[in-house]
Image (cartoon, rainbow, N blue to C red):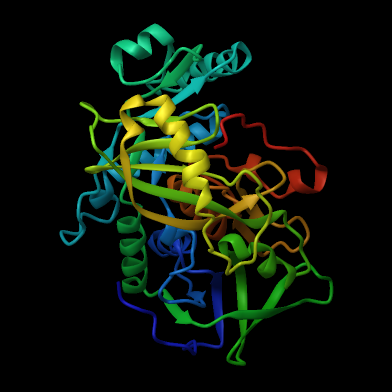
Length: 405
């Protein structure tokens, strides 16, 4: 991946300034530059050209349609369509590789009747929208996946169609590369302040760490876990903070005889096939906000929580070897764990693309397209993303979604 070595923008004014150049920022940049009805200038400001500490660099690139809210399902369905037809969406550029979607599915396990009922209701919604989700009894699960221990399981939902994981970093790399070829300017710098008009309804300039004051038509906050630091420059508070999430890669002495779906255990631990290895993950038992540069691992989490749970759920995983682990940050929306998208209610040219709480990669195609529509047309065209709007934060009305991992 080529680094963004330029530090000083070429212009003194841009139609769009995107604060943050990782997955979401580059999605917005590419979709906007690719929109035939947009012919303006775009600047992406990214402080770390290596992207080492971004959520993008620590993703597991999962994709699922198993949500309980229609718009979340449709957002993921577009993502699946985009991934499966990536080269076509990228203009049939022969340089662009195919991006396989490994459809091993998600297996949501329920150990009580109440959650089993939630899964059953969600399955009806998903099926009505064309998803291939099945609601399964423990006996049906055992027939398809005999390696699970299921004595405590009441039911499950599983979908093998357009659900699993993909190489999201290939999308990121090509969005960024193609956006630059289409004239988007990336600089290695940092937005440190913003100035508003006298009425407080418009960001007029952003100031960079290197001292330049740049005029702007629209500002897009794509700052990941640092989203509130960016929004405060415009006098706006949003409920997004960094939360640690752990990923563990392990090898099994006795590998399973079939692919392991991304299995969400009732404990909150999840696991799946990952090439020739297996991947597991979970939040820490205590889940506070952390410092933006705190990636220190709690090594006891594997021994005391994750391994015992996965070895109980899949007895063949009693004998496993941990081969790699890392810590990443969710851009965690503490209000309702769903995205915040669209303009601020007062500062009209300040657009959010924040708070994905772990859903960012799978939602990035639809969200990038949606924000590009706002920029070009002042409204959503393909999918109505207004339910994710900032208004709900002000009104205290949570976005209703039960399927949050």
